[in-house]
Length: 392
Image (tube, rainbow, N blue to C red; front, side, top):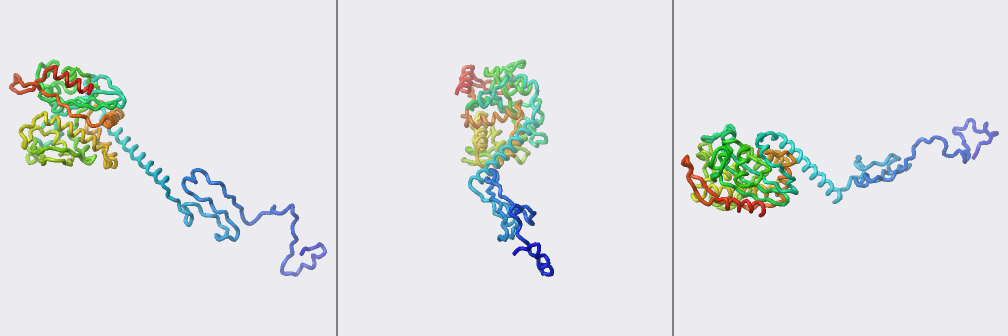
């Protein structure tokens, strides 16, 4: 019903007012007491997160015209866990874990820089990329003991220490071969005459040791590693220990544990060793349960320990210990190599597989002018061992 101009008086006094329909041209132009929302298409990121389209408010709808709740809001639809989303989350976590381990490794390696004298660095030949190329690394273990050691007669100074362990490691480009040189082998030491090869380190430190071994073998040495006895057990513990197989071992070093030294007693078979036990095994030269063992046996056992470390690094449990292992690995050695070069060595070690055990076997024995017994090796025997190291 409409109001005509003449009917205005008739509407007065009524409890309501009559409105006429507005012209069609003006419909929808006056302001409404509500807002219309239009749902936008979901983007790619929203689809990957599994979000639903926001509900379009409808007058009189079950939500009373309120805006629809989005995914993750109270009362809204929950995000769905799909295999793809779970896999993506796992990959992100793995990458983050590896990145953390790499950063810790590089920081730790940087902290160890400068531990090798400049004279030793100058004595080394230039190296290559050990992932694709092949280098020769000299690994030395001295008889220096950590400060505060309770071992009787322990030498805590690097100056004057002798190299108990001498090992050449041919590594890189898919190659991993080692040659251990017994410490009592007779060699000519530049400027000091003929004596045991391990005396070179005592006479002139790592620089003279490098020159002596290069002259003795005819091989150029590209890098140097000196094992840090104080931190070596920490590194072994950081990877959860190592597994080795041994005969019966009865070892008391420097008077045994009761006198401030180290003791290790093992039955024949496989054993899981912690850091101190692994170090004691690596140092064991005199096995009271087998008097036939000697320095050659110890050299062989040290190579076995290195192979056990490599195998342990590839095991699943070590992945969860990787940041700790990455932190302690550079601290277990003193080396000329920086963080990235040292990382290349570890990668090359994994690519090269377990190295076969090779010992430079003596061809005779002699007595030195000071009365000490020493081992002799003919030049042809040295050349044969070196050829096997280089060419396999």
